[in-house]
Length: 102
Length: 176
Image (cartoon, rainbow over all chains, first blue to last red; front, side):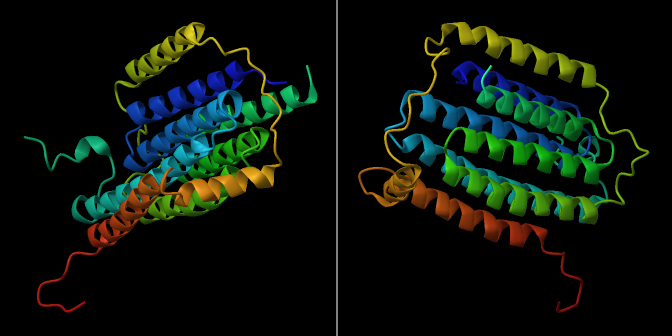
């Protein structure tokens, strides 16, 4: 059988790849893709802990479903913001979006 | 090595390759397609973890809805950043270093988790039983109806907000 640590290492590597994408990409949509990868890593961890430690308590899956809802709303609002900024400034590069810079 | 372990390793390799190509591909449409591959791998991981309902939700929410949103947003904003333009910022080495440090930090934390070598006990009930339990838990007053309803309101608010934010600015004198 698969030990729990394999799932945790897989989730950690996806999380860190997503973190690199968030920190290094210039395109705002690519940054959102990195955030999606990070949220998926968190979900893998939640479900793996549910399956290995407390399979009789279903709340682990409920947590994962709420993370799904939060991810969906986050990506909808984020993409709406990006499209709105693109209409005003004709750019999606994050360092050129300085509307709120003091 | 059992068959399950080989399947897990294969899926992991697919996910990691998909994720790496997502953050490194200069063409954003290709990056979105690689992201879909990684998300499909995560759905397969959910199947391995015997969370069948979550695997279906992963396909329906991530692979359908979110990736279609991302692809459409990429197409709408394609003129802004061509493939020839630089896709990573100046401090990408620092970013890679930070990500690597976080990864090694998480790995070193694993020594403090006592259940790491656990192998799963067999599920006592059939998988249909767990889907029923999940559905009951979501609407049970004693369990998680409040987080469920709050998530619903959050989704509604996000939908209205997204429509409002992404609406084109009204032209002067126009009644669009």
